[in-house]
Image 1 (tube, rainbow, N blue to C red):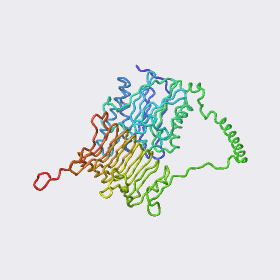
Image 2 (cartoon, rainbow, N blue to C red; image 1 turned 120 degrees about the vertical axis):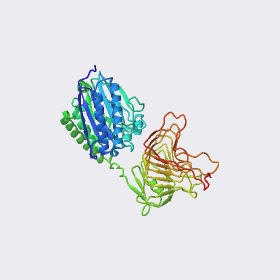
Image 3 (cartoon, helix red, strand yellow; image 1 turned 135 degrees about the horizontal axis):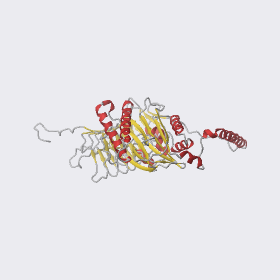
Image 4 (spheres, rainbow, N blue to C red; image 1 turned 45 degrees about the vertical axis):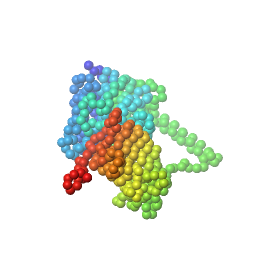
Length: 531
């Protein structure tokens, strides 16, 4: 029979500062050792519905204590997954709803963890914090591998994307690449923290650690302070926090050297130290100014600005990009621009609505042109352009992305040899673009890249017309070891297959909810025989 520990625990969920509804759910049952955080996906009623279904189904299965904890967790998540999928199929307003979740079942000195998505579980022990779960997201994977820092991950524009969820497709309990199942020691002198990404997008792990340790013995205080910290930092999402302390966690904190006690117990002493330090600092600053050592104010970086191209602004897009700094936006008025654009770190390139600017090939002596180039760029974005190629101004490739982090959205690409080429180690989002009538292929993906293709129209690409040429090209060409995600795209009338995957590729790309238009019949002459 499972042996429980005497837990101190508390959990709370808050709507945040910007949302109107709360799609998060928190559940704790210390008697059975069950702790759960759920974050709904789908917006408003759909996300809340998914979270409600999940918490009901998970509770029902975990409270029925037959089988091992591992079996109960797998079955609970799978039942919730399939119930959400079935409910979404019966109501158009719930289409696409899902959730992410983290479960911990504590028994016999261990915590059995079931996890899907980007909610998290941390363990805090002996003054240290350790992230136990892995984020099932492009940004989370890069952070876990050490490719980007925690701060960079928190600011990343793709931080809210996940490639695993509960409810978007049918699953069995033992399906691979679905449930992350972990078993860790849960010592009496340690604490567990479960949370939604509303906390970890706003509050660092170091601050989480400090807050839990400062409130050791009072988990409700830690929960409340962390939610307040997330809301002070912007509160952009619902935020949920659940803290579970082992029975010796508070005593271990008090006995550990170097771990700060609760600041409320030493407020007066700290205030006195602060006042003394402030007086000393003021005296030193006056002395330094008197002797001329300090004679300048600190340099404050200028705020982000918008650089306009067109009437009353820059005459070319390239000139504006050259002047732009990270955080700036280059806004382009309607017109035709025969330029090759080289993107810069952190600069947004945006077509000004309602008239969309047109990019054409620049005159180059080295061969067919490229319209937009991103090489080794981080945090760049391009929105709202038309890129056009024809016989007078051909494009080898409309957009080349190499070893870059880039978002391309609401852009129309017509007539290039290749629409978009993604290569090297790139993390790219292509969202709501139209890529059509490209001679060789619509999108070519190679290298160790992990692009996300979301809701694009990929039409009539690879339709070579001259005799003796190579076979028709696909809408999307994937070359190993690239591993893209394709969700909600529309494919139609491409010369070859919609998506071409190399033989022997060890893992198929993730593809969901894509739509394939029926192929048009070949043209025939009046007599019915083919041309």
